[in-house]
Image (tube, rainbow, N blue to C red):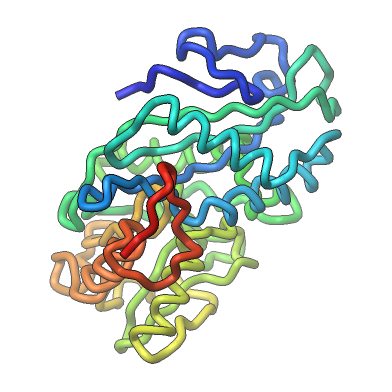
Length: 308
């Protein structure tokens, strides 16, 4: 469900007026970075919490540095723009937040400015773990590597790689795709990181495996260390290993915690969402909604309340 207002460089405009020119480097050459951020409604408090907002803003700024943008806004400026558009739309439900930084004007492929910042929000329905359960295939499209395009950046151009793999998977009858590195090791999904439980041990590919430096991945790793009593192992994972896992799940701002019940038609574990993914989601949901009081710095209240 679209919102009434979109923020364009801090100015609130109607959604239909939130446009850029077709000749902009953002459109022609993919000179566009973005963040997918989530906000979660707490009905008891009448409050909306934006999850790990500053971490998302800092990642956007890091991407702007690598892409040599001529202007990099301060975190305070970006935070204000995000919160202003949420308040203008008076959201009282879970939301998705799209924050974009792109090159406008009519420059060529090397244009570094002018820079424009856009923020849009949409209501998103709450989903259970069962609603997010997926089947996957290992796509034949390799994950991009850092010496070609920096996968750790949330750059729109990188997602052509994700799009090709995801479309291949869905054409073959699967929900999602898993990408391998040029060395044949597990990288990530089309828009989410992968976690594996094998022999009771949680592991995930390292950031050197061509994956996004994911805020949600970092959250899940911290929660495992705090609440399961052992750290997630960051290591290379072979394709054949994932077939033998007790559990697999995706995680990301949009995917949240999404159990993977089959890969290439091979059942993972029992072929049903597993207990570890369910427990991780329970930890995660309590924190994002503020019903769990831990990690208060991860929650930015939109309307001025604080979590209990």
